[in-house]
Image (cartoon, rainbow, N blue to C red):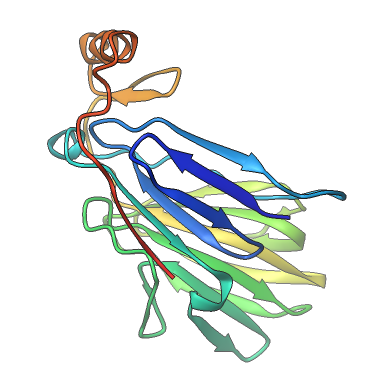
Length: 213
């Protein structure tokens, strides 16, 4: 299956299997993601990443990349697709200096190990979506998520059927977070202003630029 993207700035995208889109809502964008498959099931991940207060009213942007455009790093018994950040000397396709996120899609054969020290300034989580694995002595089954703190080491051993998981890491912003509906701001007053802007058709302030392959 695939997903059709449209947004209020005129961008249109077609996200196919294995691809990735990266949208910075920033000062405001209205969008839709519509599944286009004709049969079977489709799975995907939608991650919300908070912007620092200084960037919340910056211009929005949209990036979309096909599966073939995402670089891979071969492991002894697996592979790592580098979506954002850097791993093994390889940079991901997503460029976003405001968030500086590490986003990896890791596949391991049975009993294979993946180890990565986290920077002392990053939190992270691991989400297993195929197979099972052991992380820091804890069993992770399919659809289990583990949260890691700054300075931890991601040390995962795949189960007897192998494992596939996403690893996402980012810097804590250290600012208050207020979320309601589709809006994430720093104060309740800013949330109320966002709803007022949406109601009065003032939410979209800038046209987004679309990049990708």
